[in-house]
Length: 130
Image (cartoon, rainbow, N blue to C red; front, side, top):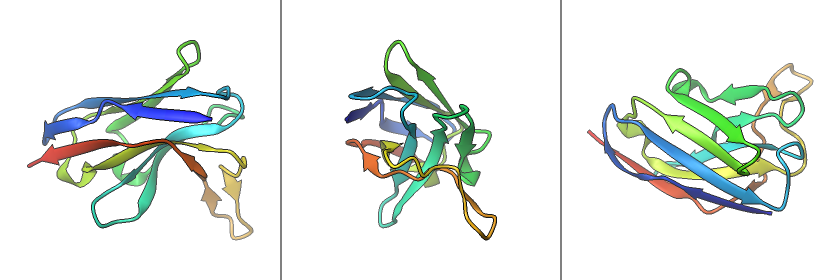
């Protein structure tokens, strides 16, 4: 299983950027796939994911309406289109998958854990200047 993210860069507030994740060793129907990020001095957080069961899509609250995840089965690629970028979006972005198929897990409490990643590729840095 290999994941290779690319497309990061240095942009201004309000700019757009599209990240790509080229993957190999599995098919999109095998695992949930998507993106996570790690900002300087913070922990890694899931940004978005696509279910391998029913193609459901989830976005972290702060990126809803600005980021769009998509995939191309023929090219074995997943994309993250990012618009209206803000300084808080500055982070290393990782392509990630859920090998254990734990995404969209509904806990006894009723909470749903959408993007439960357990394998990440090398990241790509996105820097948003104010």
